[in-house]
Amino acid sequence: MPGRIAGTPRQDGYRMPGEFEPHQGTWMLWPVRTDTWRLGAKPAQAAFARVAAVIAEFEPVTIGASSAQYEHARSLVPPQVRVVEISSDDAWMRDIGPTFVVNGHGGVRGIDWGFNAWGGLDGGLYFPWDQDQLVKRKVLEIENLDHYDLRHFILEGGAVHVDGEGTLITTAQCLLNKNRNPHLSKRQIEGYLRSSLNVERIIWLPRGMSDDETDGHIDEIAAFVKPGVVVMSWTDDRNDPQYEILQEAYSLLTRVRDARGRRLTVHRLHIPDRLVITAEEAEWIDPARGSYSRRPGTTFAATYVNFYICNGGVVMPGFGDKRDIEALNTLQGIFTDRKVVQVHTREIALGGGNIHCITQQQPRGG
Ligand code: KQY
Image (cartoon, rainbow, N blue to C red):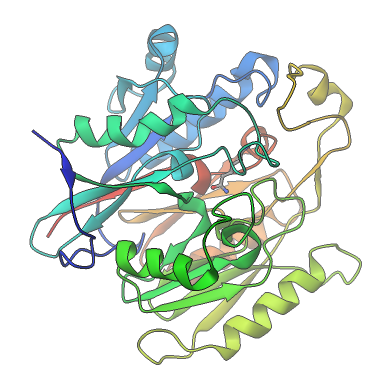
């Protein structure tokens, strides 16, 4: 029987591996919220199904869907994708799913963080989020894995990236936001990150991307390619609201040293044009009191950096933008030992995230 483990991953010799380390598989959820996704979530479902099908060419994929959507989800994804019944409030498995930790001897455990829909009643994106909070435990029960109970600490998976060798990158805008863990100091928050993910060096970028409804998740701005190597969003356009933010992040990332004392190699990936929801798209999003507004003209943080690394592959967003091909070629040049596949994901981006945000890797133990 899987159960709750006392103590911390660090005390037990567990660490969060880098996303580029071998996976057992990928977890996703099925989108249904009509106040997030237009047209009753149908275009988003098609986009999620495309992402799942591409990842499934590299490794096993499991999608959690509600009982009402089980047959529909099953019919849209390839047979090798496993569909299981898991209810949720929305479909961002990166943030709603467990973070897995490994001990290097075959042991895999999960962390059940607190979740408050990106800010709770102080700027959160919807209410309630009780079904989202249960997803981590459901995934871990299905996999028969023990868990650490950190529900008293609010953390979304998209708020942190690790290199698996003791370094973590995050943003102060998100993790120190008063709508996450207002009762904790920066030092105490660092303490939780160290003891749960087993990291030594925490690199704080001051801000995430502008127009990011998550309060600046790191997974929109930068990602580890491997230890010592980072790829980040970039723009040459001085008039772009992202310009200053990205300059600041670049200057910090190229100055710091990681947990092993290395300077980081930082690759830059130019962002696409600003993503703005059209009147036609916004018309078919159901308004709901307390939910994030997606009115015509709302802009979204769009970046190619929200890619997902899987076994032998990288699945990256495309927006139908003039920079799509250049971004694909740049990323393929960085990930020389993996096949990079681009999927058109405007429908996911209109929900406020992208491929990294809708996936969660389950590492291979050992
Ligand atoms: O991990 C992410 N960056 C998640 C994006 C969540 C958007 C919620 N509408």
